[in-house]
Amino acid sequence: MSGLFISRPLGELLARIAMTANYSKPRQQAEIAFGKTTSQLSDRERVDEELDAIAVARNEKTLKLREARLAKELQDSKKPVASTVSKRVKKT
Image 1 (cartoon, one colour):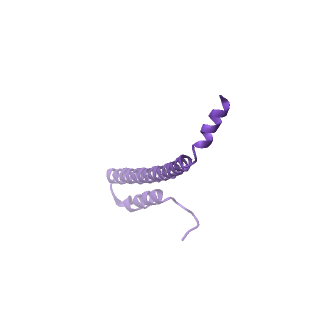
Image 2: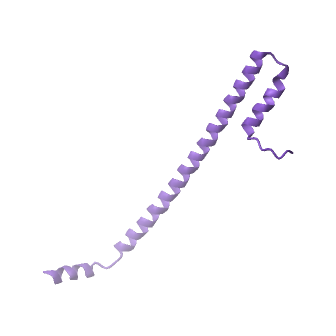
Image 3: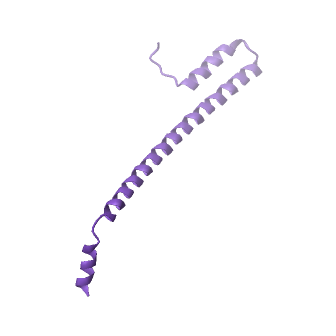
């Protein structure tokens, strides 16, 4: 294996170009165009996967924050109300 790193879509494109060396010029152009199209599709799929991962992380964070808020509200609702009533009485 060589030390030169070529991204997968570019490597596939170069391989297609090498394979099409014996084909006619229109066929070579078609093969190159097809290679570019497939690399664009794989790029879009990768971006879609990244966006999906971001959405999942956001939903998980929202759920965690909602659970924390509900737990705090439940804890606050269990506090005795008498302390707030006595403070009101003292003010008047």
